[in-house]
Image (cartoon, rainbow, N blue to C red; front, top):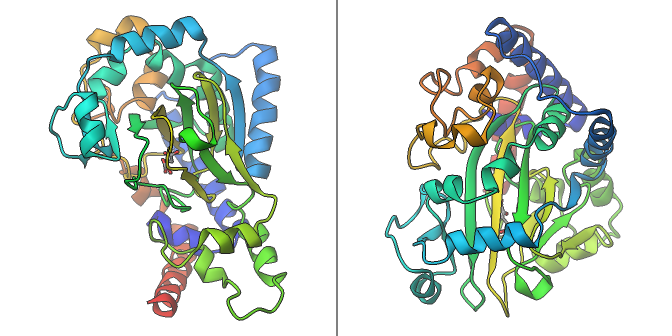
Length: 361
Ligand SMILES: O=C(O)CCC(=O)C(=O)O
């Protein structure tokens, strides 16, 4: 359903997102889930700046949030732990525990088990920090849902991995992803590349309209194609259209950023050194997309002393940590949203998507 929302101009999509998040907030308030974790004034000011940057650019950098000692703790913990060939924790892996060195020979990418993500020092604290949750929640306008924590290796070499072409992710109408590099990253060692402002329909359509009339000019539907790794888009075409907007994010291990996955992005295939990264997704309600990416919902006892476990956290982390919120259908909020005054927007989106599909297939 979320995909349909992307075939409408920003103003309408944002209008719908506003209605939807207000409804989610109402429903949650009635169930006692209503706040963001506390933040002090200094943090509140910084959160405001990051939220604005996310809205304008589609991405915000957090700087280096893990120091050398923390990175050493993480590296020590992960050393010797098996990985699974594939790209997204559990669902998109071969489910075969493999030593890292062997996985590197056989695969372009591999992930650690979710339990290693959770048991590894510092990672859970990083994705559940009041600052991060506040930032994300303020951007959505509602307490966030956290999903699919992923601990991913991209190996240097010639094999192409997932998400190494520019693409959009179609997870929902308001969603974010946070990345933290766990190895030093430069352009040739797996940097993430992002095209600023391309989450904005208005921005992209202005670029399309501003093209010199050339035979191979891109059409708007080429740029809002609801398929992963849209084959019709060449790097060269994107570079020309969005000249000066692409940013390669380099930095030492511990460097973090949050971005809107709907904007064009890719992981540049590492050439000289493997890259290890964590990413975690956030949405304004659970969008179902990342639902099965964890092997199972984990019992929280093992992590309880590392995570505030109040009603807000139990709700936010319900997709992979067991709580009273885990058992219900995680997308059950959606039917409540998609009725009444919202329905006409949805219907228009469905019609729009059908037309778009006809044009591009
Ligand atoms: O590996 C990367 O840097 C890109 C990952 C990506 O595109 C994604 O998570 O959607």
